[in-house]
Image (cartoon, rainbow, N blue to C red):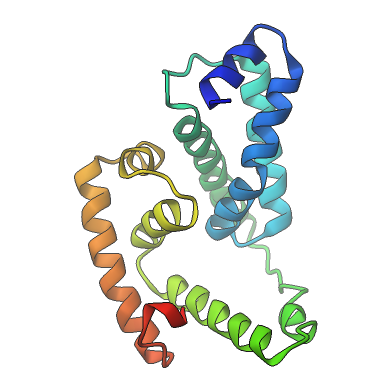
Length: 184
């Protein structure tokens, strides 16, 4: 069932449709917000808040635009959160640094995890706008138009950010010793 059908059913009073939308997007949206605010717990809270606002206010969403609307609303909430957090000057050390590497069982899993860590490290080194465009299109699978709607820019700007981002990623990955895309 499409997002439009599920949202229409929710608006008609079918709560299971809202549950299906939440299940469909919850995990992806949490990872996206975690990339913005760098705190998985806060990202989870922000995703829940975003869904709560949508489910209580029943905004009018154009046909085919639910996912872009959801990501845009969540992104705006995360950016406001990041500004408030920066004002509070909180210093937080990540508690789980390296835990995922300690739990690795096989050598293949270890190297796959190391490559994943290197890719994320490289992503964090590039321009935030390029990083967000890459994240939305490659990791979240959004179209250029959907990514543009989420970021509040035009499609051409998304295309330019992706070109620049891919070039920077190649350079950064090469610094980490990853020269082929398959390795990443």
